[in-house]
Amino acid sequence: MIQAINLTKSFEDIIAISGIDLTIEDGQVFGLIGTNGAGKSTFLRMAAGILKPDKGTISIDGRVVFDNPKVKQEFFYISDDIAFFPNTTPLEMAVFFEKVYESFNMQRFSELMDKFGLEKKRKIRTFSKGMKKQLSIILGLSSMTRYLYCDETFDGLDPVMRQAVKSIFAGEMATRKFTPVIASHNLRELEDICDTVGLLHKGGIILSKNLDDAKADVHKLQCVFRDDDSKERVMKRLCVISEENRGKLVTLTVRGTEEETREVLMEESPIYMEMLPLSLEEIFISETGVEGYDIKKIIC
Image 1 (cartoon, rainbow, N blue to C red):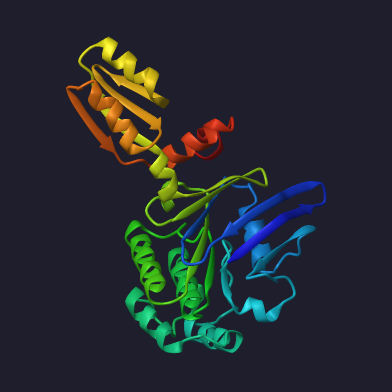
Image 2 (cartoon, rainbow, N blue to C red; image 1 turned 60 degrees about the vertical axis):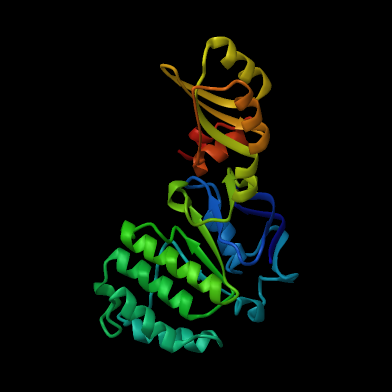
């Protein structure tokens, strides 16, 4: 488990991270969402022990990360600004990381290189941005660490490759202790992979929410009511977060249990009713709206 307590970091007069309290549970894909400049990279660099917090701590299973080589064997950090040693090949980088990480699996490295169609002895400087991203992910997975920190990892990958990486992550989680922590400015990029999402804004965590729990309490539905009076009764009884009308078709986002929501609607015998899946954006709108934030201005 990764735990940040009152985590704070400034660069001269710029506050990058301000008093963050955050817990990342094992065995889940954690998404750290925030606009550019929100503090995502600073948080990951402190989580990786690259930066020392000005105040507070960040630890793994109660062990402080900074200046702790043994704890650093637990994670692999993929920076947004990918850097490899000059004039090296993927194989040479793998040999280097094999010396850094006790658990590095060279066979796994070869398997993933073949799966991604990358040449082990080709100079990395000839790789495209997307290929370099793929290589960094391969090296991270081959290190066999418990945690993989990914800073804008999917940026530069085409949609097919993104799905391939997500599938590999799922496979890793099913076969060993593995927790990816993925920072991104794009909500939709993490839509179908994250179990828990934290929203970072101006250096602070606005919310951290398990998506299954969030979806259990917020629902989206489409209805065609029999008349205006029927619609008005439903609107009074349900906790309506948002409403959209297209002719007679009404789309509502409501807070409450699914059972209660269905019961209220069925009492009015609507002409048409359908429960719709919620997007990550809609979940965040429902959560941040309560706190007075406009998520569309923050992240969309």
